Length: 259
Image 1 (cartoon, rainbow, N blue to C red):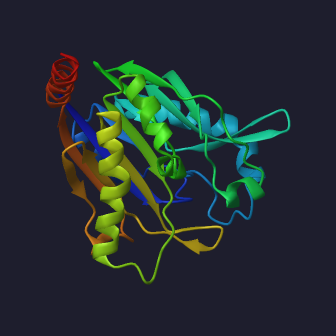
Image 2 (tube, rainbow, N blue to C red; image 1 turned 180 degrees about the vertical axis):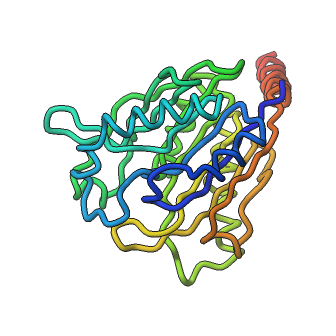
């Protein structure tokens, strides 16, 4: 089965997709669309509390956007507050209807210092004929996250991300890091990984948009270094039959090894 995913690498604080961006996404005929981590966080924010107050409005916007785009939307992430806790939460909507949500299990130290509480449950959902899972940004630094996705038989893992700008980062070091984290994560989970990065700044710190798509057999696509500060809307077709064949071969190999 061919599944078309659309990555929307866009600035934090843009306050939603522009009409031109919506039309660009629609033109590509996506099955699944992913926004970046903290996409709707106000540009002048100094903490997460103000963003948490806009929770209801943000959820309603994401539901409406999925309907406008006529697709399944992985809504980046927004801040969700329950009682005295704030969570970095990603929502999935399909054509206006909520499919599910995931709270980031491994927030960064900086996030926790600003009040973000770790989630405690991994989740996945069947939509558009495939099983979709979400990990958020720093979750990918923990191999057990990919192991859990493999247990849930996820086909595509979406990773909304805010990636800090590193002035001394070289193209070679980026490639090695992507292979070590994302290609290896795809190998562990036996799934495709779709990383969607934010650009601009967050709390005054510059970001680099290093969006990419990885498979267990290697990187399939990534933003060119010269476009890491740009808004990028990119579509890519993923073949889930290739994953099924990979899993079938590995199962046969395990059975043979037991003989």
